[in-house]
Image 1 (tube, one colour):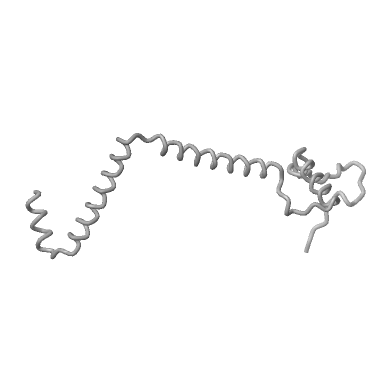
Image 2 (cartoon, one colour):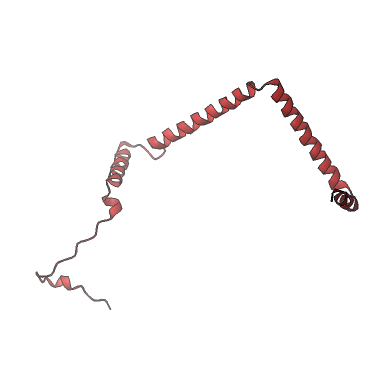
Length: 120
């Protein structure tokens, strides 16, 4: 059972309600975007083509990555012989530490406990 609204009676004294506007559709940016989409559809431009903003952002990202790679290569080229030697030694120390960890993993548990007791 539904009740009928009072304003249908045709009473001229009553104020008839108006349909509310959707604030999103009423916004200027939404109208412009909709107009642009309609124009692209009429021209036959599909959604495969990217919007200008997205193309610009991708271009900037690509340029930034290229610039970053160039800077890294230049930094590698500008390393002094001293820095190169330090890097080699650091790598050798890392390898030695990894080998020691592997040997410790294969050692029996009582040897590990004994070493821990010595340290304390």
